[in-house]
Image (cartoon, rainbow, N blue to C red; front, side, top):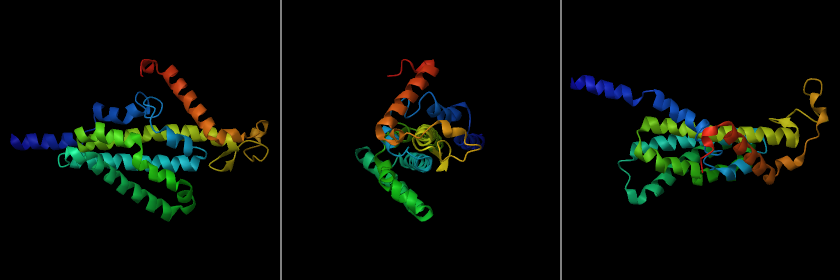
Length: 227
């Protein structure tokens, strides 16, 4: 009987039921870090001028958030409450250093463009918030899923903003000419629009984020009362 209970408990540790799926899907819509919680706005303004920057930042945040959640949850019973935030910062900083070294080795130019912003992941309020609010109180598996879900929710919004800003600001998509007089996309279907450099400035990013928040809350009626 005890052996059966142990097996059942082991199986449930890595279960993927309704609650686990919700950890992945909620941050994509009902509890999105940017459009609902309005967190991580600074990086959304800074790294969304080009798609490649937004994609790299999104992958970095997913990695750091998922594994910092996992490590924090594994150590949660061993971390003294008095120094828990310091320990969390050390965990995040270690993972961010790994991201910086890998990016520096694989794509040095992108590393130069994003080096400051990659380092600021350490103080990203989304990551610190999930460690404190979720990882410190839940199992490693659920914490890992929560990290992936919130990272993806953050990354999707970054990619949407970067798509709008690069296409209409530079006329390119992943640096490939798409619209404007220099476009070679199909038969120059985009020649009707001249890229507006205002779209790559920080104020335009704030405007785009505001419009996305408005559209999201207008589409999802459950978010009307979210403050």
